[in-house]
Image (cartoon, rainbow, N blue to C red; front, side, top):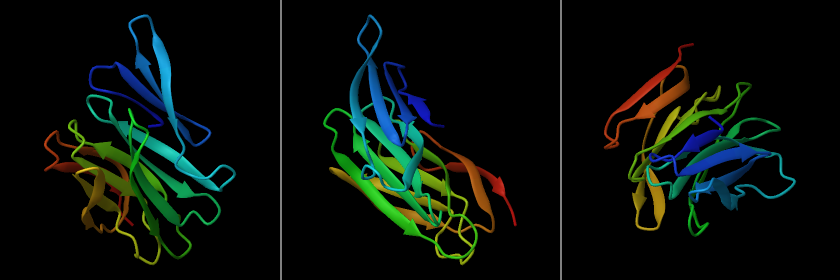
Length: 168
């Protein structure tokens, strides 16, 4: 989705014009606490989905390059500091669109998983997982499936993944 609450609903993130806006409930309503811009202003790249850790301190997102629609991106931010923790590009090939379909993050923000439609040439796996290593995320594993991922859900401990999709 283009919006997400933290586990306690004190934090909210939503997308507007490819920019993530973070809000925090200060007791008398929500106030904006930060904006996160994954792509250069004026670029042809779009952010499309967001997930938020339980405490609201880590934002995970996905996006794509809007001209060829063959490059999908994964990114994460530390909400309090605004520091980018992850930026990873996945370049596909062929006539199919390599669009991101979903993103999930564990409640403790230790793992992030993204789901993709997949590219025609099969260069990019449809499921890619990242694990936190100190102040950033690193590639953990990936899975190439025969069709597109439409949605996914990650267990609280980050060890089980449920997906739905479309087979070719």
